[in-house]
Amino acid sequence: MRLTVLGGGGFRVPLVYRALLAETGTPRVREVVLHDVDPDRVEAIAHVLARLADGYPDAPTVQVRADLDHALEGADFVFSAIRVGGTAGRVRDERVALDLGVLGQETTGPGGIAYALRTVPVAVDIAERVARVAPEAWLINFTNPAGIVTEAMQQVLGVRAIGICDSPIALGRRAAAAAGVDPAQVHLDYVGLNHLGWLRRLEHDGRDLLPGLLADDVALHRIEEVRLIGADWVRALGALPNEYLYYYYCGREAVAGIRSGSGTRGEFLATQQQRFFAGVHAAPGEALRRWTGARDEREATYMAAERAGGTAGAGTGRDAADLESGGYEAVALSLMHAIARNERAALILNVCGGGSVAGLRADAVVEVPCLVDAAGPRPLAVSPVTGHQLGLMHQLKEVEQVTVEAALTGSRALALKAFALHPLVGSLSTARALVNGYLDD
Image (cartoon, rainbow, N blue to C red; front, side, top):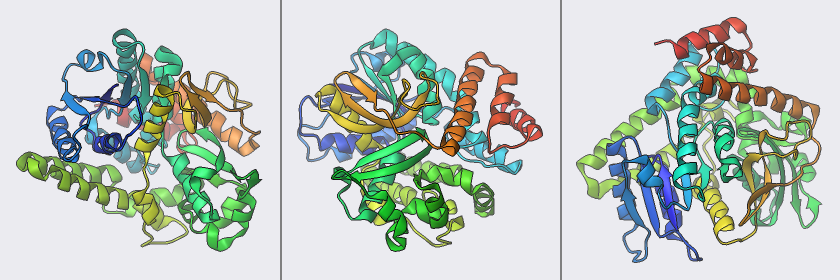
């Protein structure tokens, strides 16, 4: 099989390739094609992949193709992990919002809307090219904000565009470990939108372990999301929230924590990546060592400001298990194997809900458990949601759909509507200032 990676110069591409090296089943990926608009970045990542392949005589071949259509030709799967505007765009997304006193974060809040406004047109163009050049390919979307981008790409590719995120499965893994059971042996009742969801049942051998977990102080505090948000609030919800709900439940603390730090997450990553890519170009033989070090630093500092402002307090680090476990690359390969090998798998994915979440439009992209085989993913019906969950999903889904329309039409009025409707903005005058800050040169 041939896998094309769009955004092939991205820092997480080696995670995907490393997972491919461990594959043993058939069919398996034999060719990896990297495409990126930045030739220097993709060259550096190709050096990392070459070092990873050392000692693997049957490692997938790696090609770099500058022309997008050429890169897509013959693809069985397309991984889309682009960053329109690069890290400089991310920094601007964060800073414009923070300067106005609202959350500046990559995917959640006004920064996510700004990111989507410039990304959706590019993503739709990619989807149209896939439909023309590789119509039988499945597109797996990593590009953030994943829910919005997947919704836009599905307008072209339908069910063959699937969004993935590792947050839900990571939450389930942490919950299972805290409950003392094998994460591979549990069924997760999870519902939401991308970066906005709740784990409501943790089933093992036909029994829901979540009520017992919620009642156990020691076990509950082993879960990072609980340490972020607080055990009392988690118990009040009766569910385990996705880590990104910290920004909704602890919004003021989140803004204060980011603003009090030495820099935003985007600024940290911009500096780190500049150092990494410069180092690889100076010494290609050191590419893997430099990437490993940078990756460890990146993972260890993930949501550091949020953890410092959470109920656990400053100085609380990430769990070792979170650093060692496979992330989004494991989800992506499980999805690819289920389709290519017709191996039935249960995965939490971003797909067209088809009415699986009562109260949301059937054509809305939601993040829910799916059964996947050669026919692709089929969302499973989920149990009824609470009024709080449905209300928040309704409001955010409206923001997502308006954002897609604004991005595709270039409408400033619709962009204003998207910002104004977002619950983390909370002010029409602030929404106007966000539009001016993001859309004006």
